[in-house]
Picture 1: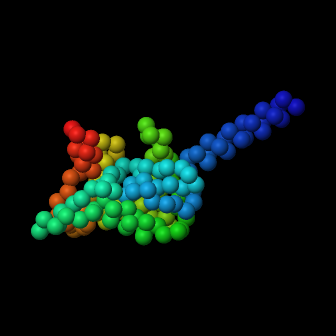
Picture 2: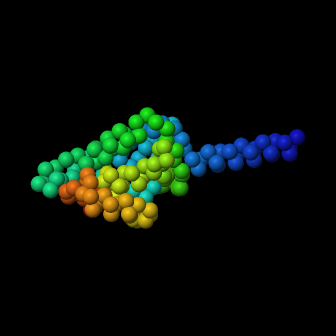
Amino acid sequence: MHFLLALVLVSFVAASQAHADRLTGVASVVDGDTLEIRGQRIRLHGIDAPESRQLCATPEGQRWRCGQQAALSLANRIGRQQLSCTVRDIDRYGRFIAVCHQNGTDLNAWLVREGWAVAYRRYSRDYIRDETEARSARRNIWSGRFDMPWDWRRAQRGG
């Protein structure tokens, strides 16, 4: 009897761990690099998008809400379709760090390639080529001037 109970417990723990490595479902967009699936916050691995309140400037100096636009573009891209996110880590805020896919498309790479996020070199070198492509094509945030998201956050904190 104890053996059977132990076997069931081991199976349950293994299934829970396998489930924790992958999150699937319909996502809602929190901001340009954060999603939520079934109440779980997911920070997209290796990228950093402008913050929701962050402004960018066109080449002519016109300011626009690039952070808000990044989040809206991600929401439009994913719609109400299923995502599959492979968890890589958990950050200091308790969010899952993950690479998310929709119909075979790496959404992290898509955001960077479309110029809605930058490669977050502090944590990964995975999306540098995508950033180079977006910068060369002057897509979205690369079309004018902007502060790197980490610099913008530091300035908001007052140093």
